[in-house]
Length: 186
Image 1 (tube, rainbow, N blue to C red):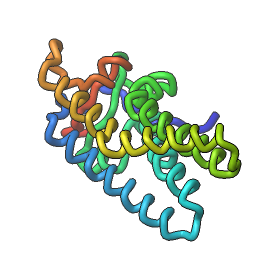
Image 2: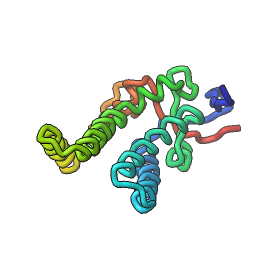
Image 3: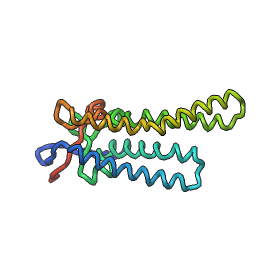
Image 4: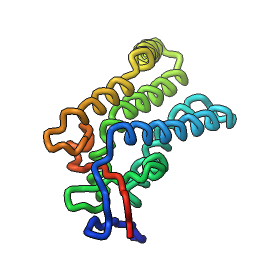
């Protein structure tokens, strides 16, 4: 199965609940990585369909793998943040998937839309043209409303109303995880 880093929180590790500003800044750093991946995938000579699928898929795998394996992403590690579960260990794969469901679902809709639209472009029949037009309208709606951005804002706002005072976002509440800032690890 491979080595999996688990940070055990005990008297030797000083931590406190991560503040929302650090969490947002960590997400921005991770988002910049997505921008870089998107830039290179769009300029790598790949078909638009493939590069459109590649960016959200790589970002999702990046978050899932690093949070499962190490309890952090590059952005979180820059701010010394760790994702922990209720047992104060790195979340298991199921908890990581639950934690990232908010990011998976909207991207799944976009990926399915792009996939079916690409298939529809291959067939000139009237039925496929109608499907292609409907999917184009959905894709334009998705792009203009930016469902992801809206969900991220709602998710972040939940941090300010966490009854347990752990600054947990909606995805943390759903997965029973929380984010800490490591102050001292002896």
